[in-house]
Length: 182
Length: 120
Image (cartoon, rainbow over all chains, first blue to last red; front, top):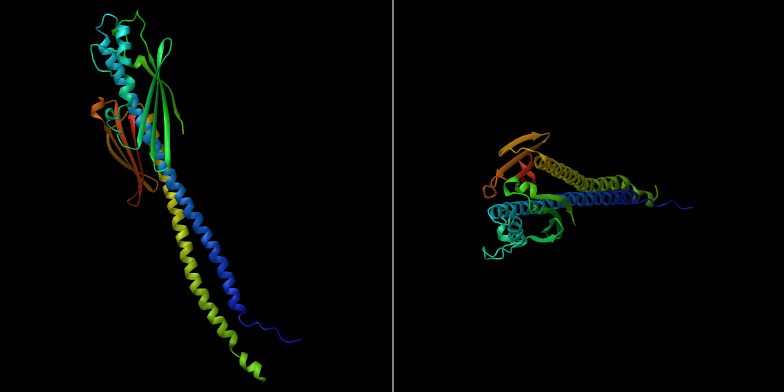
């Protein structure tokens, strides 16, 4: 039996071991980089969420101020309730323009803080039997990240027997729901 | 001593030296790979903790019944948190702009901006 030729065995072993270590190292590095990217993405998602929430916050304040203006407008009118309703829905003949609550909320120029191009806002007002329901949807995007939030508010309609001095805007508008749509 | 044996003399030591040299080169490369992995993992950890801290602080401010305007900085473990709260004049003191910055070793890791509203 001839002697087995072991020439180059150590080199082969070193190369084999090294390739295994390099493969494991590369896998570890790619996992770490993926993990880091996920954390950065998480950060961007949170920022987009807070932007969308900020838009809704501002929309709520615009609605609140609008209700306050409606109260001020209606308090010296003969029919307080109808004047208040007309102001909210934009049917005030004496004010001329069609400046309803929904229109104010949809108009981006009314937003002083959030007026970036990456945000969209939509508002709808539904008439219920004894109140109105305002639904505002804000959508903020950052690349492929999109965050959509919905705010549902109830706007009360004062009764015929209520005098304007007895009520404040805080009594007339209240948040029912604040939810993440997407 | 046969001709074949004489030809193999000293081969193993040369082989080992050459293999060690190759191993040393590869080890240097792999160690730098590992070091990078470690740094990236640490950065991911710091980023996540900074985001969580900023979010926690922002939610605390939003939930509080009072608001203190101005710039405030303080340390939280190894991070530095800077809060800037400003009243938005146009909204008659009902809206406050809040900016939370979390940094570590002078590097800003997270910035969260939002609003705090106070109507009641």
